[in-house]
Length: 291
Ligand code: HXC
Image (cartoon, rainbow, N blue to C red):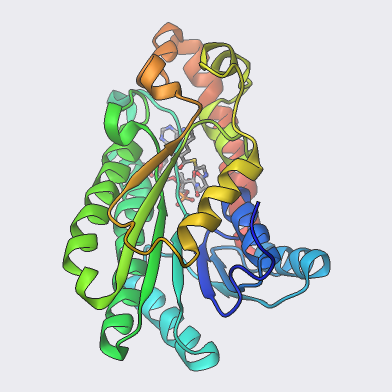
């Protein structure tokens, strides 16, 4: 779909780049010639991904273990990047956290676990990178990975819906405030693209079959479609495009509106089971962070 070397000369940071959508976007950027930094909480996972991707596509992938909830750690990461590889040209705000839960059962800690990663953390990274671009007189491009529920809202994932909606507004606000510096901000709102992190926490014990049936195009997303949109938005040639959140969901949200309305049918016992299964995934991930 794109010419070889489309992203040659780009130096791009992808948060949450070790797994899921972030890893898929990293693969396509690398294939198109970009140099990459991938960041996440699990250094071992990042290093394994870097090895896997460079073995397949060549190129350069550097890793940095960071918890984006910590501004000082985020700023130290940005400084390291500038020192070791020169200014970034692009940032993908992909790192996120989410789980399904009846809102009445959330504790303040549960709300903060999501909001601190998605809302605060994505702002911290954008701010830390953006201020360096402005100070140095460099252009830059930010892509944030959002969800279609920035328009519809979504039951049972309220901390995520609120936080992602905040980033949707950040995208529009900073597109205006930072346009004069040559910095553009856009966002992608993917419909269902099955990944392990999302499947285990958002559809524990279930599959994506139902969303395929309901979708106007009768299927879920193919990863290459998301990779292509992320490459298009990061490439040169359309730089007047800024402040936009683009849905890629086969028309799903236009046809059916909010996600997760079907969870109204879950019983207390179903929720207990879902919570146990989400906890198992969280424990597995946490063990990886300690390693
Ligand atoms: C209710 C829950 C819960 C659940 C955790 N909590 N799981 N509450 N139901 N299922 C509560 C805990 O009880 C605790 O509160 C608080 O949240 C913090 O939990 P921890 O496990 O200690 O947090 P932490 O280790 O920091 O993990 C953060 C996380 C985890 C967000 C909970 O899921 C994570 O690290 N996720 C990252 C990867 C991820 O989520 N990927 C999917 C993203 S999908 P108390 O009060 O008990 O201390 C996405 C959108 C996808 O973002 C859209 C698809 C269409």
